[in-house]
Image 1 (tube, one colour):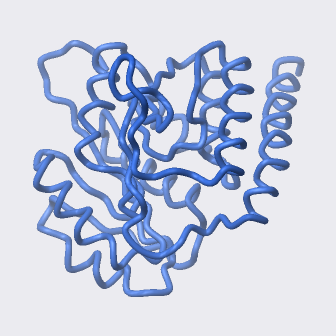
Image 2 (image 1 turned 30 degrees about the vertical axis):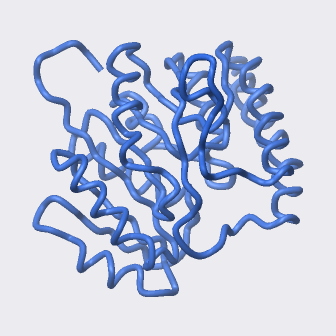
Image 3 (image 1 turned 90 degrees about the vertical axis):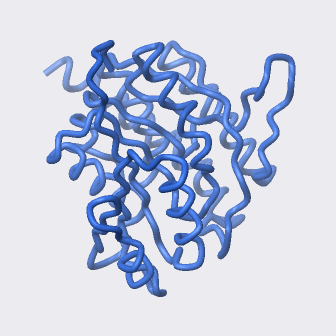
Length: 253
């Protein structure tokens, strides 16, 4: 983002799958704390009343809804939002999950980092200290397996990208116009949080993190159980390897 006095146009993308219970409070908080931001809910083929609830939450042009005909997963839902952001020429897009874990009060931290350091991707990290010398105070605490997996992926990406990453699996992120353009055209489906970091780094974009507080999900349960977490830890490094091989192949061809 440049230093122009023009106010950037910012879109909040809310991917939602079976989040009918959590959406009203989330949207109310977004509208109260950030009334100048456009909110886009992407209903990812939900099986509950998410679409109906989201429809009622639409307030003129302040809240929009896109309902996908089937469940594409978080990658497809976020890419849908990024395609909308690119089409409507937004300067910044912010991903805020529909389960209530990403407090709207923390959005300002992401935007400040993007403005001050000219990042193309700002990640909200659960593992950076909230204050200097303090400890992260997120109410949300991942399982041991997920924490180990996140630490492993973060260390790997830090080495590959040449910048420190502490929370590679965080879905609380802000994208610049350049990042929106790249990811709208091609967004990974299976492990998007991890793979997009590598994609943007390979494209020469600037990546940074800020400490954020995250909450426990407002309702429902995560789709990632114990077995899924183990599979995730095995498949993500393979996905990263394939991304590196594709890049090397394109450079040689």
